[in-house]
Length: 312
Ligand code: NAP
Image (cartoon, rainbow, N blue to C red):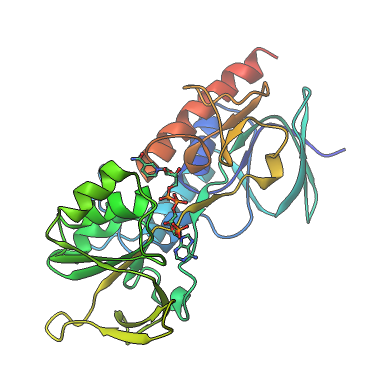
């Protein structure tokens, strides 16, 4: 029979690690299970400049995460690498079955995150964080006075394109059709914005550059014509933002937890519809997916877990 932890945290991003820190500090026996490297989305973010107190020049996502991991460990949270394949969440002891073993906890905090859908072009991985971004709030400031391209035609793409015009000198929306999916009211604002241009019926097929993104191939899906877009010579680089939807990491919990578009519904205290099961961070239905809101969710979830364990 394996050990029954007070709390098992699934996911080692900012929400999971903060939950680990707070749970460990509350003297709960705590296990954080992460399938890959800690950090989630910020592990691929070159610089973090909007997390409060994060003002060290050139501070990267991985270094912030390394400190969060260290802090959770300092307060006694155990960390294990495994891929969870199935879960049993009902009852007083929750069971998580992974590739390497079975884990039991009195409560579970789900912090598995949501991941932007990749643009789907050649060399994308090589230039992610080096010109390609999936977060305008995080990275827009790095493109002050540069040219920026946005892939997508939904509310996110168009709203984020408008946000990017506060920084970039020109923003071109590349959309695979000849009309936007975004709400009409959002479209109207974008069409009225002189800094926004459009490439219709187009998809990015390849990105390139030396260290940083400086060229891409765009295909017209109607004519098949290929256009190579090069960075302005004086700039030497441009930005490419992908907003073609997100994939919440919630498949494991389908049919068990209440969800909206794959995101887990919670109350303000991170409770899901199952007692002793909490959700924190990007996996939740929420309005702002950022490190600071994930960390806040993690802290709340851990304190609620502490109340739950004390009362059971
Ligand atoms: P979305 O509505 O699913 O739109 C995704 C966009 O990306 C669509 O225009 C789609 O093109 C395009 N796309 C999808 N896959 C693609 C691919 N492989 N290559 C190129 N383009 C691709 O996603 P979202 O904009 O992230 O919005 C998600 C949800 O949040 C929506 O319900 C949206 O209304 C909501 N939201 C609301 C607000 C707001 O109300 N202010 C803001 C942001 C998001 P097609 O149009 O051709 O399918």
